[in-house]
Length: 561
Image 1: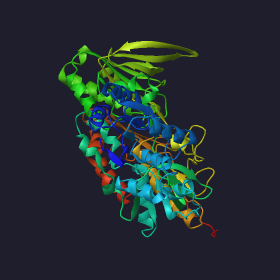
Image 2 (image 1 turned 180 degrees about the vertical axis):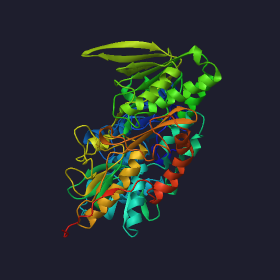
Image 3 (image 1 turned 90 degrees about the horizontal axis):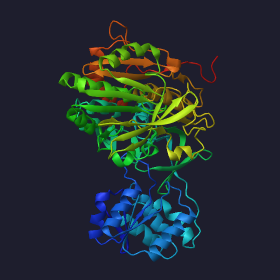
Image 4 (image 1 turned 90 degrees about the vertical axis):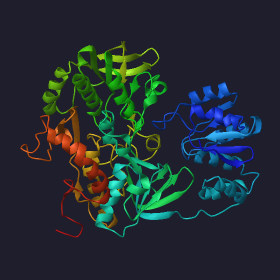
């Protein structure tokens, strides 16, 4: 907990945990206000847990959530009512504390000068200088709207797609002005979490400081996007700041919707419920695997689309392999509950996977969608689809690995960049937005019908880089993405079925069969994932080295025959 006092009766804080509430009470805070909607992040405790802890500590709790950059008049009035009627001092929190401090600033703008408000928030560590026009308007002053800082290329998202695209652009044009908007302090190598969950990697191997992975020459705008203004080529941040661009690249990732499964957020990380889809929980997967000697192990997969469609079954194979080697698999019932109707979407790889399903004596339950978890009683409820008939079934478990439902991010869904399903709406070949020609999208958050994997991003980033520079130069788009994605299916410790495919399930192997036959389990493919791909990620993609990822380019340009 990092409490940042702004006024004698008010403080803001980044996300707090239930265990922090008692400490806040001991520090003298009488009221806690949550300004963050549930489900914004994987590691975010639901507001109900904070409220329960507040009741236990004798502290009043108010839930006033709002999305970044979307403070409504009703929210502002409700917050003003809290300041007037609730016991103080008040501690408000959101993801970083910026929304809470912004809300306080606007609530006090009719009685304190903008200079006084900005000074108080700055001393607390919140730079709200971009909020000055709104503060001055509320204080009775009329100011002219300043022009935002602008860039040749503005990138939203500091994940694999955003960083790799920046590196590919600067490789081709070192003097381009490029900025990345990203609120997180850390960057995660998510493909490594499967191996963390199997005890092969330590989780520390999969995280680095954001400032250390950004390419030289990129400006890091440390903030969260609130909205897009493509008609004026601007992006707004949750602190009120605006930035302009000639070309916008959107690579926001997607939302892991843990809250979509009733009871799941409350039991994750305990009661035998785990997930390799979270950095902090992958070690718990291995801990549960080591501890289990008998009973029922469930592994779930939600409806598509999801990150790496093979990941939910990878953990099943690796856990089963551990139990087989330990001599206890015969006493463990393994079941894979898949909301879909096939084991893997590309049929060429299914025979090799089925050999391991039989080897581990795993039960495949298709059209089983997890909808509820009772962690204390260790019961999972599934919605089962049989034709047009739906029913529910309860399954007891001793260990359960959950892959959460996944959707587009809220700030993307609410933007003019989104398609009807909530993804950044792009052409599947050029990755250019279908409506705004100087906007591109890539990665897990865009609408392309490919596998959502880092391997896909590795191929997409150079395509976006080439085409973004073409737009800057007034030329035709010359690079195309073929839908390539890769899923290294870890079927046992030391062997991988290396699935590589593009649009329509077309096989796109990177190596000749005599090197790696992707349709068969291979030690060479394991060596590739464990030893080769991590440095390719950190020192290759993020430094503009496009190993086996050069884009398909046509050379026709404006003004040529």
